Image (cartoon, rainbow, N blue to C red):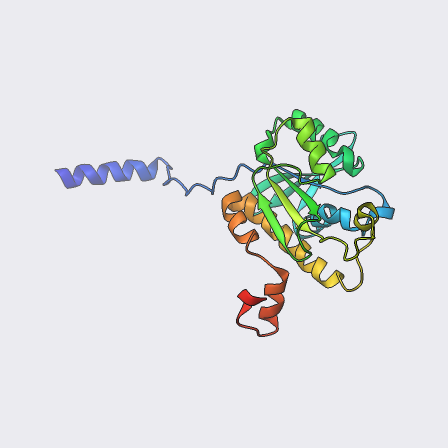
Length: 236
């Protein structure tokens, strides 16, 4: 009797069209990606536009479309990354006013600072390194400082792309960040931009913690050492 009862329950379950629950996707709070830079062809290949380079890489690698609503001071895209969809914003203000565009989008789509990720250049990281953090100060990055001020929060995840500092102390910092990449830097820049775009995709699909662990250990020098056949990459 018990066996027949069990079989009957199974039969009813199957005939009802119900299926076993599908595994849940990894929890990722990331909703809005903000890639910083200056608009216009004059600044296109400059160090300060590292964030824009990451945006362009993502748009080249993933299906995307312009968002139905557009801010007055930015370009907003819907980007498909795996099973998830991410909003990508390129502020069209100049760098120091980036927070105005971010605030406008944040209010329209009701996204909190902790559910954003800002991609920007960083003088205090050497070229070839990335750093992902969930919170902190602007570190002197004017675009990030503007966003922190507009949103009244430092709890904004940020992915810093290292551009290094000028080798000569006589070089003005503004001139340095607004200068184009040198020919000697371009191979490393391409590696860094690709890696940064991959880290964004990882954060979107698997969460910031997993992306942080991988991102903060990444180095273009290590990658090049592996390609060249060096095994003791910890010394590179």
